Amino acid sequence: MDTEMLFKILCGAIAAVMIIYYIRRQKKMLSFFIGAFTGGAALFIVNKYGPLFGTDIPLNLFNILGSLILGAPFVAFIVIMNFL
Image (cartoon, rainbow, N blue to C red):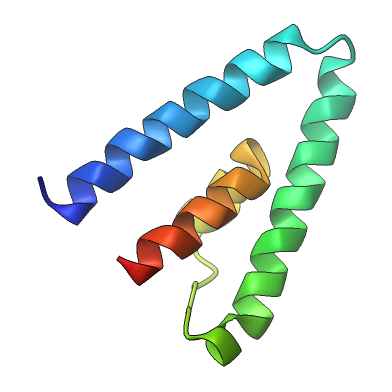
């Protein structure tokens, strides 16, 4: 199994977990906005300071939407996949 296929499978799994998380929350919209904020902040921090640690995550449409919808776990997953 190549890295791209592993990336797609794990992105789908993370998306399913986050959807279930947001559905089960009592304040769904507040949880979504907090998750979007933390995901965007994490992506910005990794983009700004990542090259110091050897990880270069570009700001493209896929990364921005993924971090805003899925939150900080998506950004952590991208960083992990960058080292593989």
